[in-house]
View 1 (tube, one colour):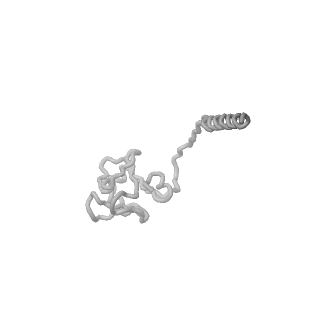
View 2 (cartoon, helix red, strand yellow):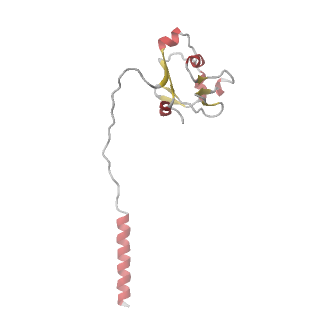
View 3 (cartoon, one colour):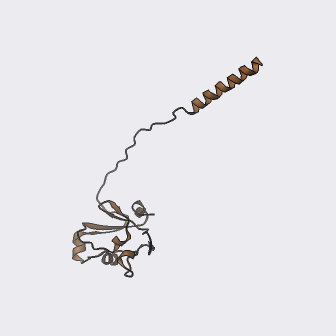
Length: 140
């Protein structure tokens, strides 16, 4: 009987030590990693179209639908209202609900669909990204 009691006490004590070891802090702190690169002006091999203020003014591009005429694979159809404006880049787009394309103004994403049918007014420039680099800023 004493041997059984001692054996049970040893098992209970070992179980508590196992639980304590399992609850020990296993957090691993990682060192910070800094990634840097140089931005060098020059020709880009990306599929993009860029319009600066002077070009928008000289070519009389007043609304984004005017810009779509100048950009390959960008289609802003002229049907529906401003609230349901559709936008397609390389065939990707949606007529209803949330747009699959992203729009950034001053680095901030605009998730509302009716901004694609707006005036270019005081914009400094417009850049339309097509291809894999567009996934960095798009919705999908």
